[in-house]
Image (tube, rainbow, N blue to C red; front, side, top):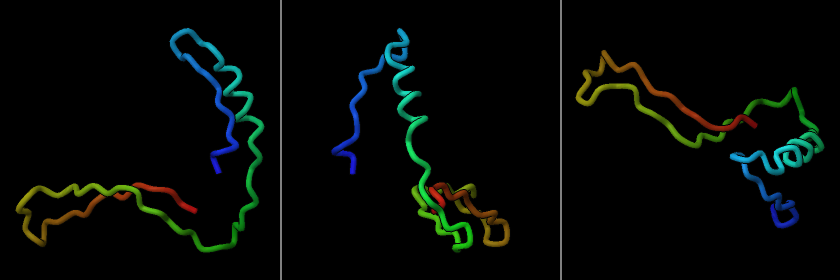
Length: 69
């Protein structure tokens, strides 16, 4: 999929080609979406917010991070 993606040399420090990146991103088409479908989340990472050795009745859970499709 990325084999046809453009390569745009950029330097954020000197501001080189930032306008070209913004212009390209503004032209990316918005994909069709089924807003009535059930959401599906791909979990990329998770974090445990409990302290080591926490008693079972004191466990508070965790945080999941990812992408919702």
